[in-house]
Image (cartoon, rainbow, N blue to C red; front, side, top):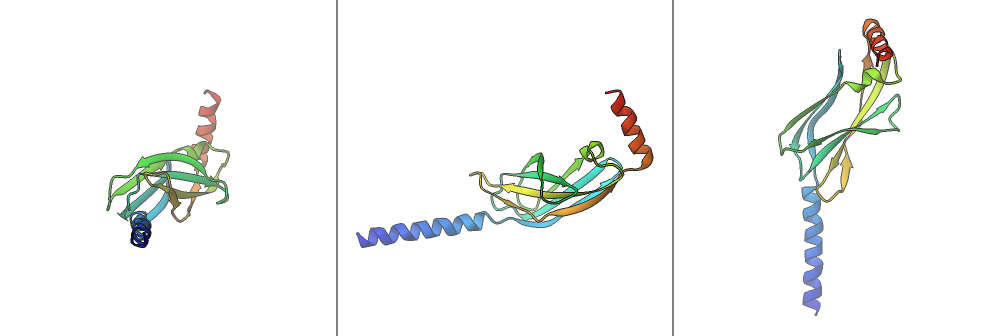
Length: 139
């Protein structure tokens, strides 16, 4: 009985340790750059540690109120990902705004971790801002 119980504890400890090993995610970089269409988000992984997908989240003006904007399936270790967030031009923020981004790294079992939070200042030119307002009138 003691051998069975000890063996059971060893299996549980090994399973937990293996889960921690496979749940590790290593990002080489995670950046956001403003451009004329919006904000380009890019990241590269070293080790995805069994990650099933990445959910991109954004917060405007402060890093406390994140919303989901896009889900991207993981493709394996040493992968490059990018997403062009064009919706920042049409939000309530006009002129120059700060946006915060983070990645929700979701495992196949539904557990998740978050990446670090990054920020970018996105400036909309006066011409583009005016044109966006004109287009909105005719929608």
